[in-house]
Image (tube, rainbow, N blue to C red; front, top):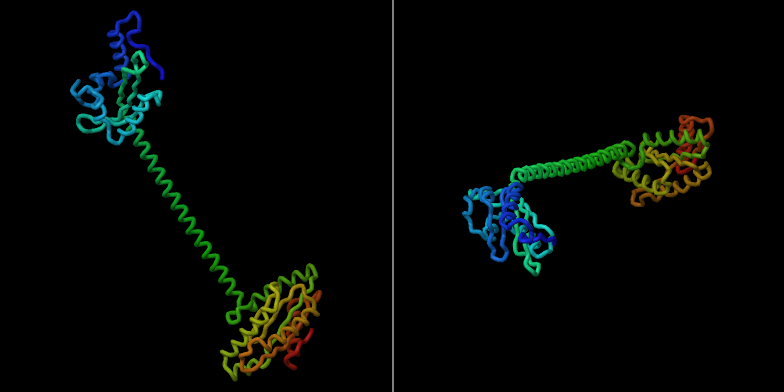
Length: 344
């Protein structure tokens, strides 16, 4: 570390004059000075040092222990660690802010700076001079500002957490609402007994497919069927068995159709299927397969099931009402013979 020239080497001036000048200078820039003779452990403190802490001049023992005794316990370890680092040469400066206990028991924030000023012939320091400055007001203002900043930071964290919580609550509410809407839409489009599409949903899909047919001419077929002698099942075995038959047929037929096919309960024991990109021949082949499947839909029913089918393909220039009437007329003819397929 840098060394000051020993006071004896300042030519033209006596040692006493130099020390007096040094003390005057320190008194100007500080509230109290200390002068530590490292060899004897004697510490001389200026009247300002005592006055700063509320003590009469020279009223405390002139040693290092006096200084240690007035340091706040919360600052003591840090100050001693840094002071020792300077003594050991591990730190180039000694400068610390800490609290000192005043005579009335209160604590005063001070700024403490010191450095070696004399060395022996081996370079070992023998004297150290330092100065204390009263920084209590500035330090308290800084601490108060830090406290307010910490409060603001805590408030910001609380607000952020509140915003996050509200955002999450809003997200969950939106998800719940979307689920309710989706459930409401599904219920509005689903037959409550068979859980396939209802007539309303089918008509919307039919309208969309009919428009696509008008624009692009993609082949599209419709298939309608009616369970034969269904009234007899209800009359002889009760509506519970009748409902069971409707559910079994719906499940069997739905499993045999494609994902893109729209299958719906048209009303009572009548069902209808919309078959996009399917020509009349393929629709008739499907109808025959479904006619055979209906008979095995629920082997546990008291009597076997049969169904009458009507199949039609969309035609250019034909409206939806005309198409449905053609399909319905075909089903009427099929029901006259029972368990058959009518192409129309």
